[in-house]
Amino acid sequence: MSIAVYIAVMAGVTYLIRMIPLTAVRGKIKSRFLKSMLMYMPYAVLSAMTFPAIFYSTGNTLTAAVGAAAALLLAYLGLPLIAVALSASAAAYITGLIMQSL
Image (cartoon, rainbow, N blue to C red; front, side):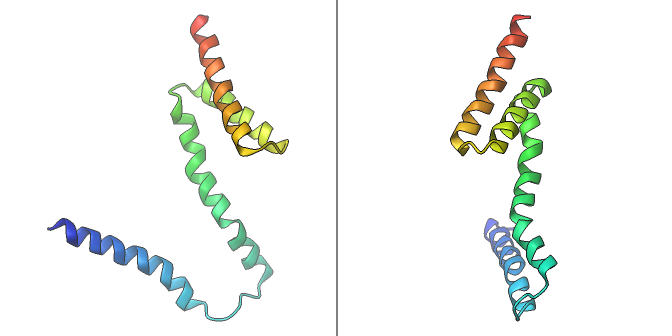
């Protein structure tokens, strides 16, 4: 098969996934439960994709856990995203240096 056929099939599937909900739900959604579920869906999907990658990023589970704990704590405290990301990376890096020296 040609690569153009693969691209066309991927484009069709992507289009259908996005258009079916728009055509299936014509009226305004009145259910508070469904509205709240749809509102939190992007955060849940992003978390499900990102969280496992955290523990495979450093090659060491302990350094990844320290970095994740630092990120969760700083995010809970309301720090900006750049501060959370840099601090979590620094925590994981420093933990790795400490583990190498032992």
